[in-house]
Image (cartoon, rainbow, N blue to C red; front, side, top):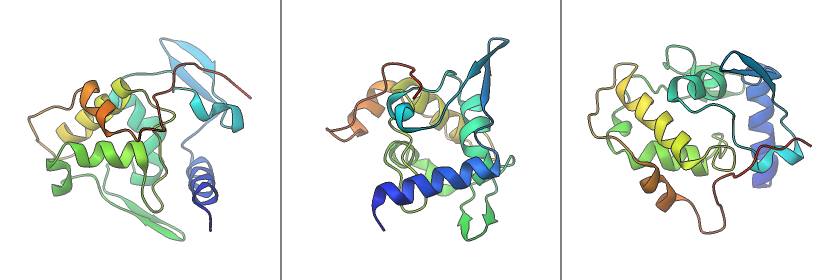
Length: 154
């Protein structure tokens, strides 16, 4: 199966599980959020790690970050996860994806990825003190992928 097909299937699974609800609330205003071919380089309209987790990651990794089994795949726990000790690891996973984990690099800016990773590393029973910077995220992106620069629909 082609990588793009797997990514689309993973995004569809997340959507069916409730990750993308059709609108995103930012600063008390509903912003239409469209997943589709035109959204590939569209950054998500929120910045803090907690909100990004709740809207993007939570449907697979669960509200308590203890992972889960959504047929046919199992999603790893982020709570108390020793792999998060190396701050580059979760950033690489978020930006590039791996296996059933879709790449969110084209949807998240360097600042958003850093915010999400720092949130994960300091919550859910994780207590890693060193933080990831947006500059460090930029170095982890493949040369062919740049951070999203505009919000656009279809």
